[in-house]
Length: 195
Image (cartoon, rainbow, N blue to C red):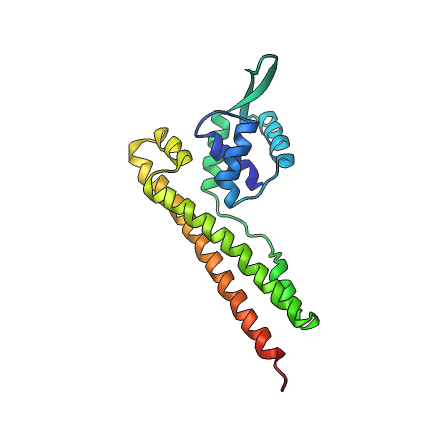
């Protein structure tokens, strides 16, 4: 259900079409919540049906139209209620750590490849999140600047600082995963040495 609130948060900045929302999603909340188009568009329709959004058809090109979504007062209330509700944690599904528990079944070269891929993946994420953090800290984040323009002056610092806090957590998680995989490679090397 977090997809609904991610979409409400983005649309609370400004009305958007599904296409524009999908682009903004990928470059902002998509860093913390993955959702393909095949989930976003049906959820927008459900949210409109549930009264959280209001859609209007707008002219697009010479003969087409697109649906422009606005958050309703009910949508704003739902977003605020969600923000004030303690999160329920789901059971963990972690394929990398599951696989690590059974690396004794893998050839050492394959196990090293797994750990190298884990480092590569999390290094890529780390760099992406560090770039986003720099944008937030320097005031060059286009989405944050649009949100701040619609935010009362008294709340702007809170808005910025919580975005920074979220990305600092993502960075710390990526760094931990990189260090863990590097320890895994050292372990593989140590265990692969003849006794």
